[in-house]
Length: 307
Ligand code: DON
Image (cartoon, rainbow, N blue to C red; front, side):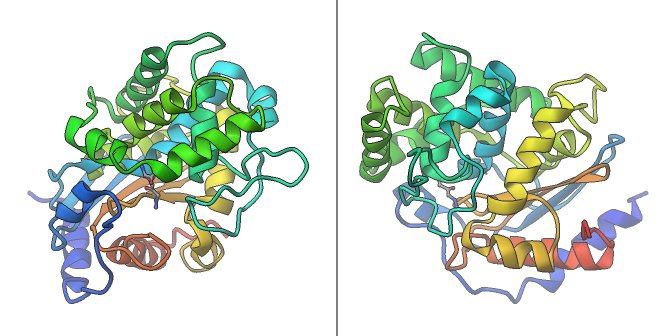
């Protein structure tokens, strides 16, 4: 018999079918090909129950939802103190693809904007790591968190690399300030590879549940991340995960979260659940219109607001 919570999730998606505002991302050509009618949601508890509804098998590129996980990887690999020397902890108040550097230190404002995520990507593994080793670290950590081997989609990677002027410009600026030491081209290519990893909503919910449980994987019971790292990642997600809408989001939804331009939203409510939603139409902030609504309604119906 179908779990009653799945009926709830199906009803939730049904109630949002009429919502057709927003548009798919167009600045990366392959994202413009997404089917705007797709809609999916998954919820994973920290105790390992996973429920999905809608187009739950649809795969999409993880895009910026990769940022909390590479941040977690860098924090694990290099320690909180060292990572803090390269990336600040400020809400940026600007769009995700702005330079947004702190005035004196020239550190990117946070790890959830592109400049911060590019700086974080270089910190993966350790000094002297090759570009291939850093990309593998990003993909294998996300795979461990999802509970299955994830892959980089070559078409997405190529599509974004062919339109990477802005990220390359950010990379060169970071290098000019000594935040990057490696070739900007290599670090940006690694960052774009991490954004091109394919996932579904179930993967996102399980990955979120691992953050929510302080680093214990909900399906295997293995410790994958330290609780200190999860605390830091969730803190930054709370203040900067939904870009300029982060303040509104925390007031109305109240779940640490991260969105991506493919239409994904990942939520992680400490001690309770991970949430993954997918619907490609975006609002002016770059957040999925239906995804934001799904999370807002679930937060209200299920009393998930952190406050
Ligand atoms: O760097 C970019 O533009 C994309 N790879 C990821 C951006 C993204 O998902 C921002 N999210 N709203």
